Length: 241
Image 1: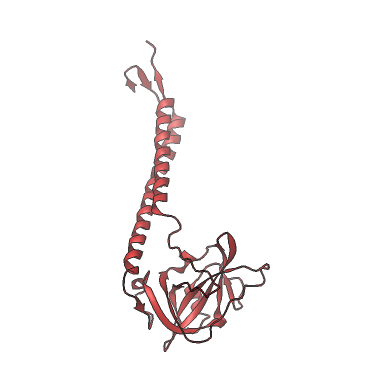
Image 2: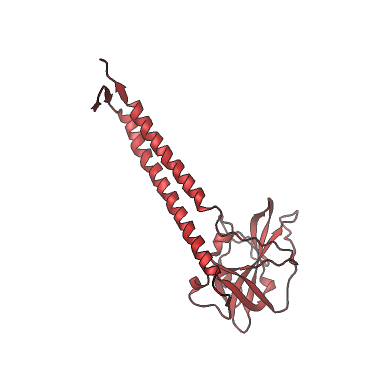
């Protein structure tokens, strides 16, 4: 292809490379934009749900999606003998565990999983940290979060051993329902922080803001543009007069 005094004569090797890589860069850019949009939707939904009046949870409804990001109040008894430690959770640069204790709702067979917060690990992997267990009936306030894997660590293989307290890499409500008496609900109750409690509770629902994904998308698009410019420059030559 001749354009003025320049001749565009692409070589087949850079052409193949460009054809293979350029669509990937563009797709990655649009994927990051879609992730940014998803995070905006989550943020808007969470803001709207948190603004709703507090919901008193007297039993677990069939439609759990109605609870997500709602402020809840629930009364019941902890099933302390079925305490769960989520492994490898980091808080302010220190490694520890998130402690999840099932709570049986008063007058019901329904059980919810209460994330009581973070505890610093001991010096030995074989010795789990100790926290204050509450035996009396309690009324808790917190936020519901569906898909507990979002607030737990992922990895290959979940539960380490079969004893209680259980040490897991993530929360699997279906798996726990087989071991814990009652009907275990498949959402996490993120307990509000209390000053006198030794457990740390600072919940984050989105690990990075949507603006970060937008910046990643811009980087992918810039790389796609640079690849195209390089391809054109390398394969374009000035004609001799």
